[in-house]
Length: 292
Image (cartoon, rainbow, N blue to C red; front, side, top):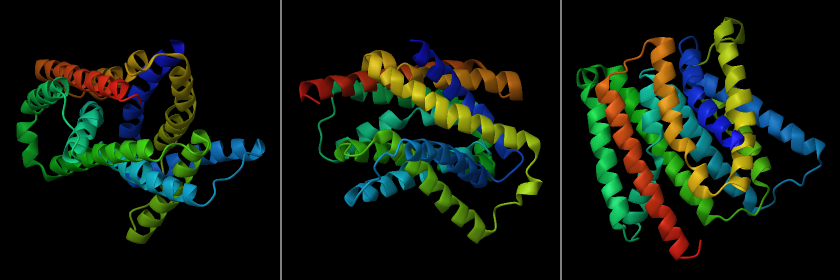
């Protein structure tokens, strides 16, 4: 339970760290540096343990997940909070289960009634949240931030489904480190080729602190706590963190950055999370019925 509390709080705070970091440096460069140092720590540990490296088709899975989960999902979500609030980014980030349901529906799987109701409720909640931001949609940067944040949740959903399809045949923790490291190389290549990175000497101390926080608490310690919680708690309890993260991000965003926190955002956020809970419950019941 302590591990779950750790995950619930600290993954919520990473939205704040990302928001602070991208104020002073290119967002994709920050994401690349976070993934580089996080991946380096994981890989160094498994090299020290003399763990076997992936072979053959295992590399294909790692590369695809690296692109979906870290280059696109993490990269775009980090870029998104440069233009929208950290709380709004966190609420959008919680929509992954909705995409999973939608994708599986278009693949021909039957949509349970509870999942359908959850989708409608979540959509209603998002409408309430964005009601307070209608005028912001006139701002091109805000629209762009919303767009890439939504795309980031879609790519994570595809990554999640791909992970389920390709049952783990390799150490998942070592794989995580390799995915982070490979994604950093791709992001560094992109920012270098497009000239969107800045010299390391120009990165201010506050961004270095943000990167350090994201590496230590976002990419290493909290992942360890998350995996520990997965191994020792029922899935229904362990999934609670996904509903607490956005709440933490919204509250801290309001306290630290003065981001808007009014009735529309509070009520809309709660309604959205309630719908997501119904979707998750429905998905879990479906998996239990088919023996997954």
